[in-house]
Image 1: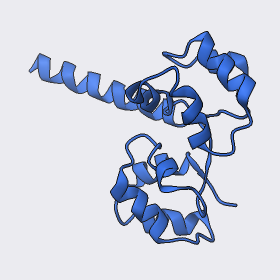
Image 2: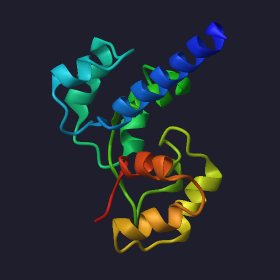
Image 3: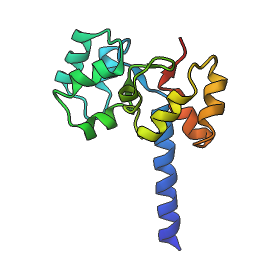
Image 4: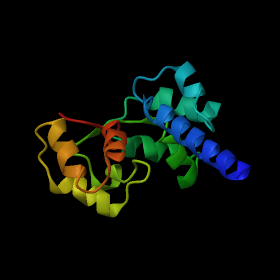
Amino acid sequence: MYINKTIATLLLTCLFIGNVNAQSILNANTASETELSSIPGFNEAAIELILENRPFNTVGELNNQLSTLMSSNELEDVYGYVFVPLKLNSASDDDIQLIPGVGSRMAHEFEEYRPYTSMNQFRREIGKYVDEDEVARYEMYVILE
């Protein structure tokens, strides 16, 4: 019984930490050197690369730069902390799939409902496929322009 409570506490703690992290995704185009240095697994070379090559028009441009230094698994972790906001109505399928946890099926759903006229429309349409928490997480990666 004690082990089950301990495991449950650990799981809730991990979920809480994940939610805190998700609410503070940095924009690679505006994050300070200090903010970038707080990203777990980010080294000086990655920070310098971002600072010297921004602004990035798309997350794909950021990904092309960082992929010279990091593996795809490392990049997926990093994109939980720093990203280039996606323009909902024009982002490529490849860029959408750089959102951690988004695969081809969900990228298709993002594209299917274009053009988006409001974030409420995005929430409503994507909410058909995932729960509110996941829609809120996705929303942190996108902008409407």
